Figure 1 (cartoon, rainbow, N blue to C red):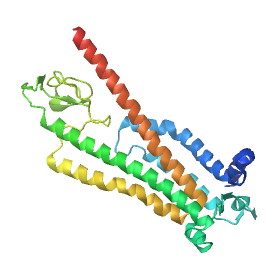
Figure 2 (spheres, one colour):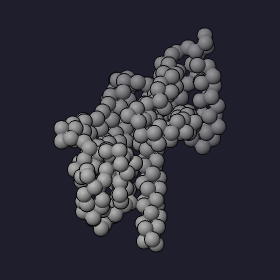
Figure 3 (tube, helix red, strand yellow):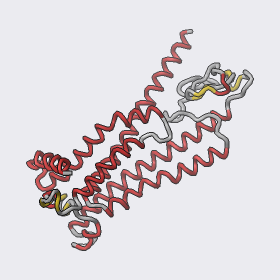
Figure 4 (cartoon, rainbow, N blue to C red):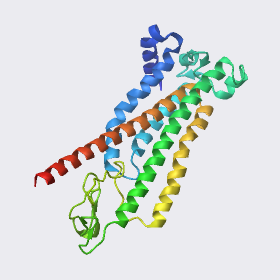
Length: 279
């Protein structure tokens, strides 16, 4: 833990000429960004794999860092010496403060209370962003499942201008035969281009019950993002800063990876369309 404290203290000293008493708080944010940058290759690999546990490994690897942050700003002594980090602040609030302590030192709208209210506002914005993206992804996946399961007809019959000898939707070959003409991301089906399901990968052949379950889960899971508010209210302010920074990074990182994936699929679809036109 002493190595961790020394690193945060060093970053704080580097930022102190610019940020004064809030330098250590900024150092925590910077430290969190460095941790997430180190974990980015894992996050990218998990996203490309599109597994049900995508992103879990980076979260698990962060848990020891979070617990270190919690301990560092909860302990009066580290290694037999006084914990120097406890004297640092974010504006008026000590980084070791919890919300309950802030309420006892001036109330909800006191100097310390306002710092926590600002933190909670940022957490709520990030949680709402995460929830909105989660709902959209679940809706697109359910819609893709309905399309993939309802438009492909076996036996080589034409459906909307595309041969359905076993449709290939988002790389999954249905019925063991390759599609005669349709990729889900950028292929012509009945004339117009289909854009796919937002880059998440279409799930072909979902039953109505499975689609309904996906819609229900998609409506509930995003709300778990707001559980971060409860955690931020219970842990020291420093740990809350780490939590909101890493959560915001996760949402932004996934949005960026999804954007790049969608752009690559559109480019691939455009190239395939140009090749077919040339033929």
